[in-house]
Image (cartoon, rainbow, N blue to C red; front, side, top):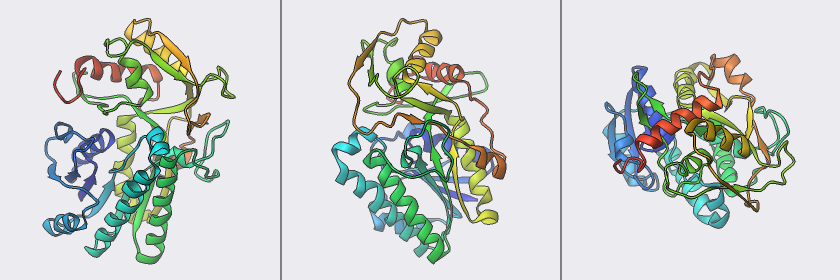
Length: 332
């Protein structure tokens, strides 16, 4: 298949584009490079710079090549920022995604894999299944839920085939056969726990902040399910290849194992050998107490299994990336 990857210069999009290519698919990456990196686009993928807000650019893109499917990653993704700038998130994520859907259908492209999030769910003290109640704790999660609802209606009314993949915490780095990091997190600003923690041993920050120590969890800090970027990307390959057979799919992607903020920091201490001082501070708005996946459905239906579920393995791969690329893609 020829797959269009929107946001394919970003962390998850570029890793997925690389695995699409490895699986034998043709890939075109469409990215505005606002927070993506041209250097992250895998060799072998065609790159087109543009924005899904621009319907004219989308029409030219779809006229330029015949795409069989779209993997849609392009979005604003910071939960905290979404609470401060809700209008921006509704516009960029919801309105511009509708722009993409309309362009797809206008040009006869009816296969979609959508990058969603566990933030659509209400927090729960136990693994979340796809049928659990929705109650986003932040605007970011709300925008993703609204896009999911749009997609389901486009499926019902317009024949769009789709797979919604609800990510839990994507992390880690893609390594080559020699164990060298070739693709990892490089957000600016960085807000994710593991890369922020690893900035401490790199001398880029003095300590890691722990936001909230009074949650109803074993050690009082938030609990999350961490999934390696390669495992996450591999699920997209299975999903796009199953679209014709199944037509409409929604799956969680996680390891089914929750780790607290304190556990992540302690594991990073073990991996890096650094004392990693931590500063306890107040909760942030929009943080759910517990988000842990049940991925039984995608395991049963598509045969997906995480290859790198161990937190220490995940953090070790991330450390290899940040240690060798302390400035991300902007030079070492």
